[in-house]
Image (cartoon, rainbow, N blue to C red; front, top):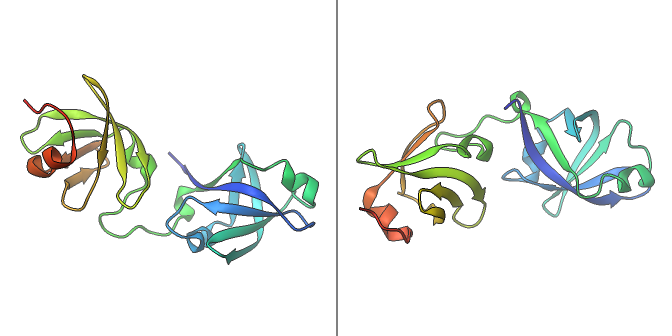
Length: 168
């Protein structure tokens, strides 16, 4: 995927069309690298960026007043993947994790990641043969992630500790 969802517009800020954006990145500051953003597949040049109280404030070309900004309320802001800051080792974009197949150390398929809920410990929603399974992902659970192969390997013992499923 060539774009990443980086935020959600909360509301207009002021009368000049500035948007208050809830970051969907680790921090609001992570949004600073994006010089162009997309809302509803329409490209907007970022004219101004600032951070306050954990939120990002964007001024975009083409959104010149409060009425135009109000029409953006609730919409998602996307940015080009190549504009994103490099990720540290062992950190992945959620969009890359979704669709990966989870396997245990013995190679048994456990399910396919359908969604990731961000919390103190991320929670993966897996689609398994028996239905949907929610799994917290604490430190030590994941042994290997291969984004190219869409494969995640988990520690057998840790998996059984955090999941409620029949491992046969």
